[in-house]
Structures are given as structure tokens and as C-alpha cells.
Length: 569
Ligand code: SAH
Figure (cartoon, rainbow, N blue to C red):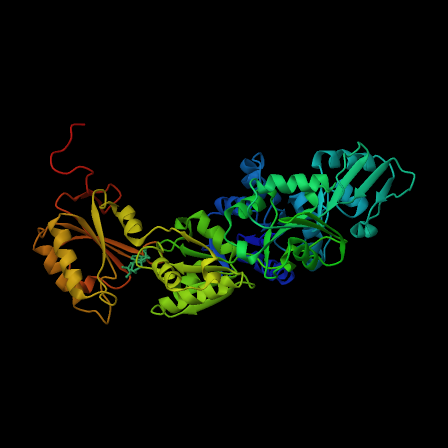
């Protein structure tokens, strides 16, 4: 089961920092997000309050905002009519004197409000009638239980609030502490059980997630077959806690789809034996087990099952691109991947750029030159069932880790490595980020080349430079220069100058998307290697690249889309 991220504590000024820290003591994984320029010492800086809050909300992150409730409401209002995640959202007074749960009643906002209020030694401003009266939200059963029907549940709670009493049928340990008006003769009943059941109008149905299905891959429409088997065994679908398969079926796509369709985790067992034996050994405190056929068996446990304790998941390895640096230029899929990571590997600068990470996430920082070792380490971790991220700056496929990871896999005959769920997630590469700031210097055909001769002979670099210049391609130089490669850039520019005029526009982008970034437009004739370092992207125009002044100062650089005769417009 993928849990909700740790809460984000959002503050607008240094005055809230003390309260934020007290809340953070209660939730050590929560990060304090502080407004850049106003807050010093936050875990994460943001520039725009509204955009930050909305993004957190959309990523299902519980929000504890230390500001006026009205500001939070107005900021999130545009999102409230959209369907989808509704994380808990609370407003807390800067001085910690008031805790106001605003949204996410079903996501446990009142529980959070009470916890925070206790940490701050004040009372939470609970306004939910059911919660106030019964001390618990009946519509938000604890982990391991699922409510059948929310709308029906709401009617049920109104009836209770109107003064009716209630019977509890089945084991509901968490209700023991609730102040429910119980009466064995009551018309209303809370029914807890895994049997399939048509809810009657007077019933609140809650399913324990205590059912496990073991399968072997192969059946067509596996999800359908599982539904039918559960129905025939009179087991309600919401009670299904997880699917279990043998490790041999780890890469099977049909299994993965079935788990996705049924919205349950898929776990793998190393044990051999029939599905019946598998399912029996996986479920503790077994009530019953049923063999449907040789490729499917059902186990019903006496208590809800924690899928995290059953077998192990398929490991995942994602090679991600952070983009040039700025958080806005990181693609959402990469952000989501970082949120689910157990381990983050990479060159220290980039691992830090990917963070801050949560306390439960392990950082493995290595030297920039140890790429193959890092790639193998990543597979070792992922093969244990962990969710591993390897970070690169820019795009991971451009002079970065993706190729190293694939090379390591190609060289390996370890099935556990090949079974890992491997994905490469792209990023904005330095040449594209630099080009965008300058205008569109890469608007026509261009050539991307690394000037580093660490992994290739210098002769091939010279040949490629010569041919690419001859072909009148715009050029993007990665790794243009370093202390151990001092003369190569000068030589490269000589080669280019044999085919281009001294007026050819050149763009130098340094630390683009990072603090202290600089962008400079010059010409090939004026460019000297001392203007460039290893944090610089060098873009050299083609014969058609143009420059003209910007109204706001500086220049625009672009290479027209056409070549030769300008098309009639
Ligand atoms: N995978 C990265 C490139 C790694 S090679 C990407 O796609 O961007 C490293 C080179 O990229 C550096 O020597 C520099 O030339 C360039 N580079 C990386 N980040 C940069 C940035 N933020 N600004 C300018 N150049 C950058």
C-alpha cells in the first residue's frame, strides 16, 4: 500500500518558525517549507505561496499552514471542486494558540488536529458533529478497514446524530473507545465483516481487509477471474488486501495489471509449492483457505492483513533527470518518483539537489567518476525489493547515468536484476534549458557533443567537431573544459572556426536554473576558453543563427526553422 506523504508545514515568516518546530517534533518526517527571502532555516524554500500550497494538495500531502484560515481556503478554493485526493489541511495560528482543521475529514484531519493541538498544549477547533459526539469519525475507519459506501455512511451518521442508538456486529476493536449509544435492540447497525452483503438502509458496512489471493500468472482476464472467485466464495471485494505471486512471475505484466485494476498491492513470495501452500503460509492467523484451482487460492485471515509484511514487492529502479536545478523545471513524474524512493543514489551535489529527503530515505552519495559501481549498487538494492532512484542532473540519458545503468544490466546475468521494474524518467537537459533562456538558438538542426575525452579518444571528438561544423549544424558542448582537460576547448574552437565566421553567435549559460546563474551572448571570434568552466553550457550558432536586442535588455538569439530560401509567410 502506498501511504500518504509526511505532512508539509508551510510558513510565511520567521515568526512561525518556533511553532513549526514544535509541530515537527511530533512528525519528524514533516518538512518545514519557508517563503524564500522571509524565512531562514526552513527545510525547503518556496517562492510562491499559492502555487506551493496547490501543488502539495494535488500531491496528496497533508498541509499544516501557519497562517490565517482564510488565506488557505482562498488559495485552495479553485481545486476543491475537482475530484481526486483530499489530503488533510489545517490552519494553525502562528503562535500555536489555535489549531483549525479545514479539509480532509475523511483523510483524518481531526486526528491530526488533535495530535497537533496536544503537542501545542491547546484544544483543537473540531467542528465535525459526529467526531465531537462520538470521539471518532465513523466514516474514516482505521488502516486495515474499508468503508463500503460513503454517501450511505453520511446518512447513517446523521441518523445517529439525530439520537438513534446502534448495534455493532462483528469485530470492531477501534470502536471500543468511541462514545456510541449502543443498544443490542437498535435499528441501526455497524456491520464489520468480509462476507459479501447487500447493505440494508440501516447499516453501516465496514470491510476488514483480511483476504489474500495467491495466483500464478497465465489466466486471461486475471482481475475478472479473481472477482468471480471471490464472489463465488461469498467474499466481498473490498476485503481483498493483497495479491501474492511467486517470484518467478515477477515481471509478468498481466499480474501487474490485475493488481492495478483491483487497486491492491502485489507481493511476491520466494517459497515454492502450490498456490494453496503459498497463501496459507503468507496469512498469519488463518481463518480459512480455499483452493479455487491450481493457479488460484484464497486465504481469509482472522484480522486485517498488512501487505507490507507479506512476501516482498518487485523492486523498482528509476533513473531520473532533475533538470538543470530549479524545482519548477523538474517534471512531475520525477517528483513523484522521489517521493516513493527508499534509496537515492548519485553524485553528492545532485542527491542534495534532489532533496531534502525524508528521514526514512537513505542517501548513497558517491564520487562523480564511480558511475558503473553506482549502477550496480542500485540494482543490488532494487533486487531486494526496494524502490531506488539514481539521480542525474538535466536528462539522465544525456552524458549521464541512464546509459551506465543499462550497461550494468546488459552485463549482468542475475535474474533478480533483470526482474527489477526499471524506468528512465527524463529531465530538461542543460542545452535545452540554456537555449530557452537565450531564445531559440537550437531552433533548427543541431549537434550535441561532449568535449570530455575521458571515455573516448580525442581524435574522434575532433572528427565529429569537424564534420558537424562542416554540416552547418548548431553545436551544444557539454563538459567543455575542466582542470584535467585544459586545452581541448581551445582546439575545438579552432576546428569550428575553420567552417564558421567570427560573427557566429555563441551563448554561454553557467549554472542555469541554479542560484547565481549567468547567461552571456557573445561571438565565436570573441570566445576564449577562460570564459568557460565545467559548469558552463556552450551553444554555438550555425550560419543562420541571428541575434537582436530585447526590449528588456540583452539579446534574443535564434536559429530560424528554415534553411536556404526563406519561405513565403
Ligand atoms: N545530464 C546532464 C549533462 C551532464 S554532463 C544534462 O542533461 O544536462 C555535465 C555538463 O552539462 C557540464 O559540464 C555542463 O557543460 C553542462 N551542465 C549541466 N548542468 C548545467 C547547468 N545547470 N547550467 C549550465 N550547464 C550545465
